[in-house]
Length: 119
Image (cartoon, rainbow, N blue to C red):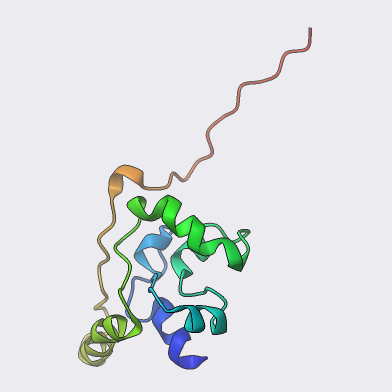
């Protein structure tokens, strides 16, 4: 619903290629994860959109060391979102800068694959 959807991107960087800067992952209990179809793993969903919703938690465990720290709860996310929205009313250029490891930053170019030789 709108309450969950608000947590996905609000207050984060816009128009950036690195989804780690503009998406949130929020830990939720099983009931909320079911109702939200695991979209609390929203960062993972954007980084790997072909991964089905039921596999997002497992994906999170595999890539979490390359991602900003997840929020412990909806409450923790809103503790950051609400003050940010209030500040953006005064300063529309303000946004939350997520802690991103640049050692694992995505590349913009695909790595060339060696050509197959026919023998």
